[in-house]
Length: 331
Image (cartoon, rainbow, N blue to C red):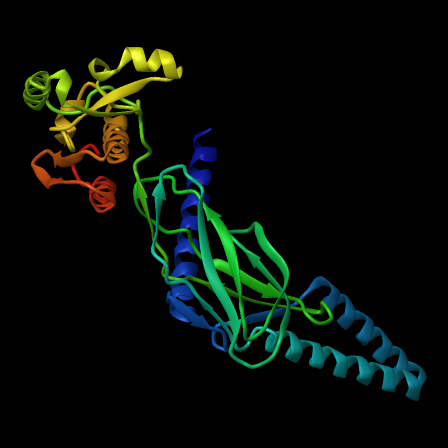
C-alpha cells in the first residue's frame, strides 16, 4: 500500500511539474495580451489522423510505382504530395491574420455563470472558414467564418473562489480546407474576473450600538412622517410593515418616512461572527445588495478597514470589491 501511495504521489508531482513547465513555455511563446494577432510565431500545426492516413496511402502508391516502374503511379504519388503540401499551407494560412481582443472588465459572484465575450476579426482582408473555439476542452463555437467585419464569441465562466479569477486560455483551431492538418493556437487575453463572495441570507444588519441608535431615531418618527408605501424587501425592519395596506394589496408593504430619505448604517464584519467563518463575507454581500436595493446609505467596516458611508451603485460596487479582495487570516 505504501509503495502504491508513493508511486501515486510521484506521478502527481511529475504531472504538476510538466504542466508548470508547459505553461511557462506557452507564456513565453504566446504571452497574455488584451489583443492578439495570429502569425507564424503563435500558430501550431500537425497532421490529423486523416493526414497520417493520406501519407500512408501516398507511400504505398509511391512504392508500387517504383516496384512496377509505373509512370502513372509516380504521377499520382507526386500529385498527392503536392496536395498534401498545399493543404498544410492553406490550413496554416486560415489562421494567419486573425485578430482577437477582449477589453471589457468582468465581474460577478462566486458560483454564478458569467458570460465572457471576445471579438474575432480578420486583418488580412479575406474570409477565414471552419474556425472552432474550445474552452477549456469543451467546444463553445464550431464552423465559424470570420471576415473583416468580425464576430463575437461568448464563453461561460463560473468562478469557484472570491478575488481575481483567471478563466484560462482559449483554444482556436481549424482543419480547413481538407481536414489533413490541424492548426491551432492557445490564446490568453490577460482576462481576470473579479468574483464577489456568494450572498448568504442573514438576519443581522449592523452592530449592536448602531442598531440601538437606529431604533431610537426611528421610534421618534410619528405617523405624520410617513411619506409613502413600498414593497417589503429583504433586510427591512418588520416593525415598519403597514399591515392594513399589506392586507388590501395581498403583499407585504412597508412605510417610508419623510424625514428618513435614506437610512444610514454601518455594515460590520464583526457583527456577523455568529455565522460560520465561510459565510460571513457572503452575509455582508447579501446585506450590501439589500441596502442598495432599498436606496440606503451605508458604510463598510472590515475589522477596521473602513469604506465611508455613501449610497448608489458606485458604493455597492466599491463595497463588493472590498469583500472580494479582503485579506485577513482565516478568510
